[in-house]
Image 1 (tube, one colour):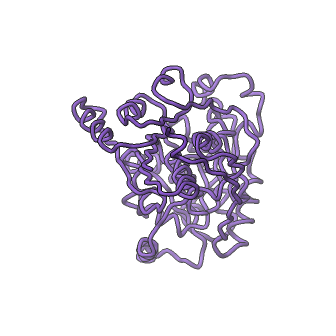
Image 2: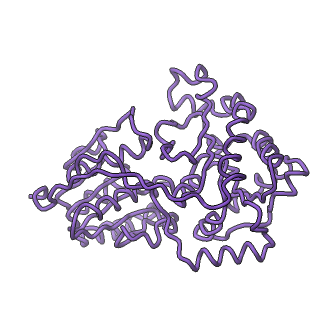
Length: 380
């Protein structure tokens, strides 16, 4: 059985949808799973044993109708039996259509119902501790895997021993003292509306710096270096002594290998937080006021995944307002999300997972109950 899973989006989405690959491999025999993702997210699924082939969607396909057509023809020639579209936008709809698969599965949207054989409506409320982003993805497996009451574990990033060793040598060559905990700070979000104000982030860093002896690393891209330097300059001299601003991973895979050696990550919710979860590293994430916490606070069942949201402290500011309106006024909402509101949360997190536990936390495996249906029967 040949299955294509489509997830053309950001790092967090791509990581979460690897759960579909894992569940298929575990519960349906004789399957070949292909995973179609944007090319810039390839590093986070490299070496994943549940993926037989990674198919990359390049930016060039968006800029050239001819290149897109060639790509779609290649999809047709793969002769997939099943396509699971976890993205549900124009590009993935076209890919699903050109696949000619007998079974096409996606979330329910009025403009795509004619393309798919099975669609499922988004859940707006959930009862699990895994987050709605997880629950909605698992629904895509309902046609052939039923009664999923839990998942085996969170998504994983698979690093090689050599990558882990090379990152350690890289840090040692930069004179990083491994006798002290290394703390990654996710200083910026993927957009201004997802970025905690720099002056507030500096206050948090100063608060952290007063709690003990450790090394802080900043996570940012080359295009964000100006903002990173601005934040560094806002920090106190004591904080600057603990920040290694000069350490920068040149690639996403290198960043993952450096992150592996960190005791925890704190900062803006987003891709880096999801990568840390996939490496079983404690996370403290600060949500943007307009991002739905119920959807994206994933795997809070694992105690070392901690999150804060403006809704936890000032719910009246958000109640009754649409996501679109909240995003429009994200800057003014952030102004209300002052660091003192969750100061105690940060101190508790540091005490619990940085300064008391000296070794890496053991991976917590979550129990799963699944029943598989026959793919062959379903395809008839």
